[in-house]
Image (cartoon, rainbow, N blue to C red; front, side, top):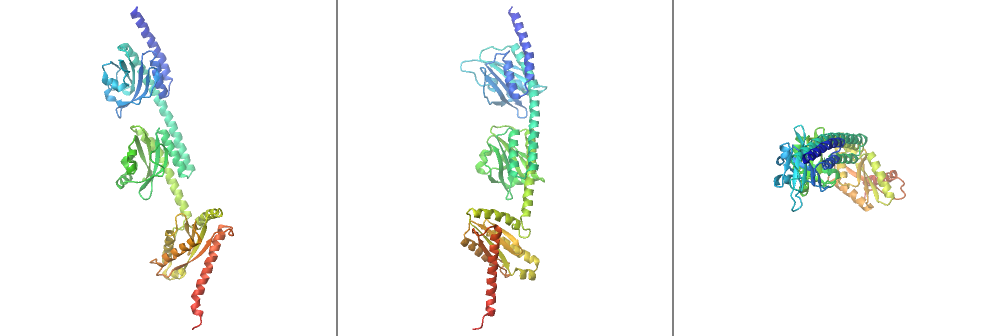
Length: 503
């Protein structure tokens, strides 16, 4: 009678397996599948504890992805070497006894004090590949026997088929999301020259697609320093941080611009005070290249240690390629704009740039900000240009432009007005401060090794904003009138000794 009852129970278990198979096959998300495996296994197996681990053969690490105890799901972040698990290395289900301490340490946390436990672990296999293991435990002795292990192994087989399907669907979903995000970045690259907006999308895409905690775009500067140009998530490195890159590292990445790095600290992107931060958790970076030249890097960070796969690097590289195009386009646009706003001979802003800047500052002056302009005209330049030649004349203009640029604050603007005339727009400066600026320019010109001996001098016309001036153009005309009067005074002074009567 007992044997008949056992046979009936066993038949019932196997009929339940068919139902379990249908249920698992219909579950296409890994997280939902893990829960379903636990729930379905609990129908035929007594389990106070239950776990599922995924196995990474490249690193020989098994990581717990699901854990439940006494009917409730719990968080358990446990990683252990696969070589210590017989179900992984032996590829066969195993029973575990209370005395099998070593194996228990690889599965689940210890049971409550005073309780013994027995358990089962079965591999999830697809051919020769181990996808992971499922495990069950009981706090009573001799709970499981060979027939339980066989049922449990059958559930593991069903789970492996369902998991392979779920991983395939997950991969398709990941590729779909990847394609959408790459297309989104591509549209941003082709539709906008606003570098900050494009890089914001790049870092958000890297954060999303690699399920990272933080992402950074690093851009090289002309002074061999690297700047945190854009961040997303928990990056630890602040936006705008500028670091000097070690010369040997910089030389290495320039020789191999398609490299990737598994730790940012390895490439000395972080200054010394941030070096300990770079080694926290896990991070990886791929380089940004334009025309095979190193222009920066895209990095992601995870708070917990992890190994980055070739797929991770491939995906990050695709995003980095889009970022590199955005940077190259933006910099090309900046150069074009700079060329259109720059005088080609002197390198100073041209009249178009001057007009844009002056209109903005004139509007600010109307709201109460002080504004003055100085119009400079080089004396004796025509005679020097005719006698010394046009190349010498060009060098004289460049020399005065450098004097003007070096003696004008960054917040102000110096520009070539035309011919041998230059202009300085001075903000938040009084009339006395404007005169001081002129005196500094005159003194620098007289002491210049080329301009001084050549006899080239400068006359300056000053105009200070007042309510009677209705436009920026009126302010420039006022400076021009002041310059003309000063020229007249100079000419009269020069003629005075010739017309004066002898004493």
